[in-house]
Image (tube, rainbow, N blue to C red; front, side):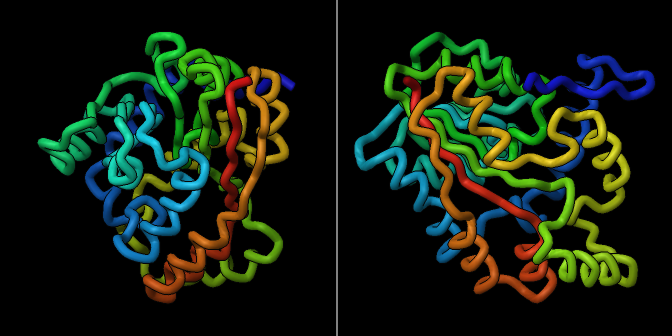
Length: 264
């Protein structure tokens, strides 16, 4: 089923994208202090990198990272030896990422839209993204573009989740966190932009939630094959071993997943 942005009073699809860009640009100031975005070195970094190691393989590839933000995932895939183009449509996010990775070889940053990259066809061996798909305003067009830029046999790696509602087993953690946030707000975990985040989410095609089961047939329709899911739990376990109680609770709220595919 085709997924389209839902109308919001006063917002066209173009201005919705601009609203999303502005939101993430503002988040760039605190992004690396927020749980779920910064990737701590050691156990957590190793857990995020393991699916990259498994799916991309040991040989150096030309990789396109979509919505790179401040370059946390960029570090991991680059450290595995790949030639990385890291793309984002927020100048503010890219400024942080460029400063963080200044002087590194095999790495370029690109100001562009992850939903319409404008990169040459068949120019990458792999495309990867973290926490991007749920924000897409036109997902089918984006998936077709990702398929286009991949070479035959190219690989796709997606980290994402259902951020619309707690999973059944996470409802108790969500309630505890809601109370905790009322008593002691966390300024780095979305902070004052929370209501704005919710308003944007209501307009998105995946605003009601995103699951691997939803995503798989859409990727298949775009031409991807060998679509598989793997558990996000190893990452969550690593996060629980390296974080305080508040963030350990956050690992239990949402249903997160990792999805891999290939260009047929």
